[in-house]
Image (cartoon, rainbow, N blue to C red; front, side, top):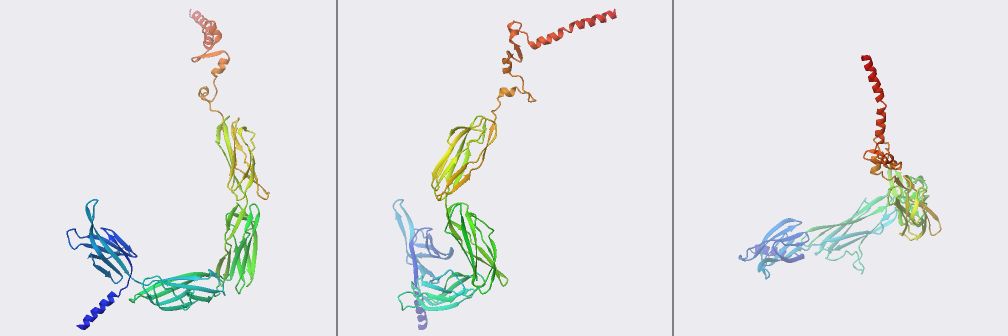
Length: 526
């Protein structure tokens, strides 16, 4: 019996030895939740007002999954696997004077067990190494948890397998940083130093640090950290250019391939100027690079537009060792292109007009470069057009981003399709270099005036023009209804129609002939 009581006492002591760490507390009403880490506590329901003792139904979730449901009164608590603990400090009703209603509330506290957590940070002194260099790594470890990290073991490995090491520490308290030499004032992190091996081609090395440690309840915990760096192969490629190029002039680009290996390399070298530059040659070369030496090529480029910080893309070299191809790239080159650049926009108010109408021409010159310039424009009026108003000359000092323009109006006396010639804009940079730029060509269609309805009515179905009223009036003949009357006949009072008079004359000459025929026929009959 005494042994059993001793066991119960020991078990209770062990249970009470759980160390609780972070906590969150609050007043919860129906449906409200309390959040801490992966855990969520919800006040799902309350007992009716007339039921005592007052209780709250609590639901506990971990990562969104329901793990426990408990009904607690004031002062009750529960825990799960010594990982999380819930305490209902008070369950009550609070009266609200505004609407004379009562709403139940529960003041709850959520605890999570105190656990250690090692935070690992790995830093290399360089991002890239070449064969034979000495690389140095520093591994910083800190316990950012709420309990001691016990029996900590640190393993450092690399891929590919260049080195491997192991460290251990009996205990690391909360907030404590791993110190390789506690006797000094400075904190000395774990340091790794190794010689970089020779590799046939560029290679990335991944470093991984694994920490395994225990808490006070012999629970196992793990942490990870790492970094990576690159190792040069035997061939290195460099690209450089002038820091500044004047727009409109050429600049040099230099490529250098260096062989740091122990054998000759056959390399195919290629480069690109990108979209903002043009080169004077095809940017491809074949070269043999002896061990321990370098080969260089150069070419010139010209910029398509001014701009600071323009980027030339990396050059590329391909070589083969033991049947495997390796690719090496240089860094990008950055260059400032200095100078003015004037862009011209030219437009017309309408591309189709009628003969005699006016059209307005607009021209804008803008300095899109990064240096000031003086721009000059002298518009030429086409021979088919007549200047009505406006200015055709422009001379203006343009700062970077500044624009100037002119506007003039012309008329078109003749019908047809005409072209407004492009405008030439002349400008100079700060060194006096002259530049010329042309605008686009514009076309204008000039149409005849529209035919009015009265004229259209005087054209027959075959497209032949009928005599017009105007021409008859000019000849002293006026139209009445569908007939034409001569003014002379009307003046005599006859009111005869000239067309009808001709008809009557042609009938009168046939009457004697008809009488003669009748007499001849009667004579024969008698």
